[in-house]
Image (cartoon, rainbow, N blue to C red; front, top):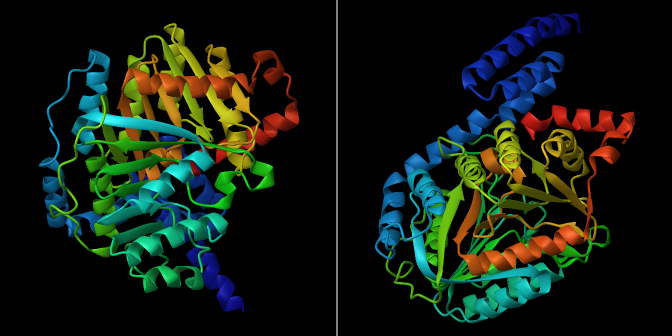
Length: 476
């Protein structure tokens, strides 16, 4: 065994040096680079394996390679979508026009007018509306989820898809491989037997170049006949109905959209389906004209690690900087980047009322400790912080000046802004935003306000816990 340890002692530091060289070449944020270098230096084997599996540069490379391979098909999908929406910027207030221009520039998604938007905050109401729309599908159904459980709720919606497929509806279901890793073949077999086309995003295949355990599709999208769309943060499972005692009741926000904005959801699904299956969905069957159903202007914002810039972070930074009266954030996980923290603090210094409501009851306690590590500097800047403890608050909404809002699948954390494929609806509508502001106020009233005095007196043990959690922020 002496030869083994001699070889190990030689290769061990050499492999660490090579890995650190890759970190330096990756041009990440300095804090992230330092974190990875420390991890590799102190725990070379674990650090190197972690960087190979989780390194953001690898993620971007895997995603962009796959997308380039289907570039021609993606162009046809986008061309089909473009024919069905008016791409001129509508008449919006100047601040909102600036945000819309950024979204248009970075993801080439237009603002569409004539949409009817309904926001749901109760799981049973969300599922009831979803089941009703699925049952009304006549031509095709496209569903995309991060998590789909094999429980009573999961079986209910599985059986709805089976019924529609047997009725002749083309049903396609795209699931994230990590989020749905517990689904068994016996649960999925009836779907395939009924003719449902089922695919997994980035399935487990360590030897394949396109595989990465850290590149996840966190989107929740449903499109019915290309005319009705659902988007938000609600997954499919019993726990999301509040049937998991420690996280009950469950609070979420999900949207039903009727109108031209559904084309943006359809395009996003078509691109992800193409990436996962190499099957193109670009014909008139999937991109027929969508009639106006309301008055709301909506812009669909798909974001992900294949993009050269952190689009969601750019849009959020611009929106916070443009706010003049209020910013209300509701999120289950709050790990903002340094730039977003500075933007929030500067907004507060300008006199903008900034409120952040975070879920105190969580399935990720480590992330909550990390969030608390930022409370001190935010409280000092005058930002109002609240922790909601009446169940799991999974909603992901941000409102600006009570005039427009963002609702989607993304959390206020580094993972959602840089690593996950996310989907966000930008709602340029005072009426819809007003209803979201009311829901934010309801959560705030039922939350515990974090006081600067009590936070400072929390004890050294809590400080250590927060400090340890904060160390891992660049790696989350």
